[in-house]
Image 1 (cartoon, rainbow, N blue to C red):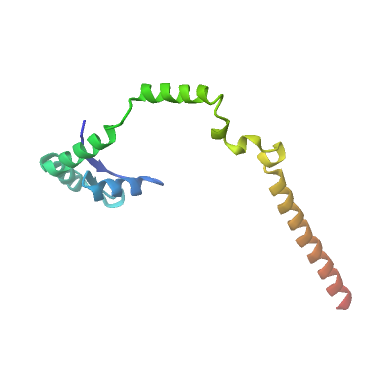
Image 2 (cartoon, rainbow, N blue to C red):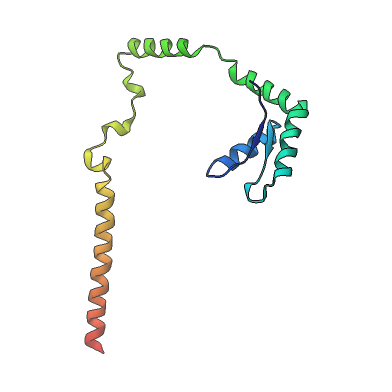
Length: 134
């Protein structure tokens, strides 16, 4: 629908995404921490009345929609691809073949636990020796 954005990001990736849209000229970013009614109204009026925002959004939308195949055609192509290559084992993730103890990270947990035990035992031994000296 080529609608420009007035973004008010709150969490995680939202500030990056809205700033990226603002940089491309698709909308404006407002900071919720010091946002007031007047600032919000001015931002909305700016993106509504300035054709630059709508034109930029229209251009980017057309770029995104210009695909060589429709979604259904892509799905059909991938199904045929997998059938042609008898399951396409070369596309299978190697992580699916991990042993169960690696999948559950038991090897990593074991190394961490053994390291912590070695540190604790070393400290106990050192404290015991220092206690005998003093």
